[in-house]
Length: 132
View 1 (spheres, one colour):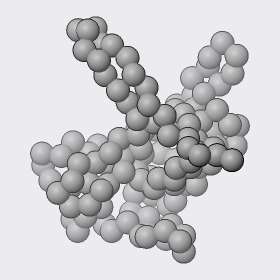
View 2 (view 1 turned 135 degrees about the vertical axis):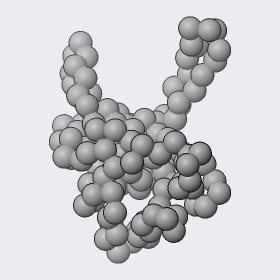
View 3 (view 1 turned 120 degrees about the horizontal axis):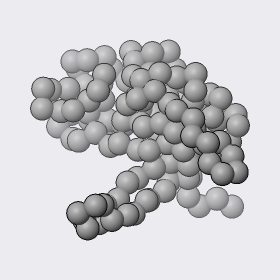
């Protein structure tokens, strides 16, 4: 029984990339998940070790709407200034790519993502650093 399973739909903040480790290939990405008006965007690091999830993620580009499922991970480290830092991420088991940044048809069980300026991802204003 899996206890740590999450599903998120959001937009890619950059193009996915492959990284070769000592033993296998990792496909990485960054997902922006909106929480609604006047709330900050959640940024999640994506890590796909599965061949099939990696293939699907590599089909997407920056700004594309994707749905990912997998395990939630918390990475902790100390930066060069000795500050403790954390990143949330998902170790992806499945990835579903939707059509572009204005995708509305993301499945019957999911809620469509509205287009800007009515709410899209996060709060769409000049002070919000959303890269697409």
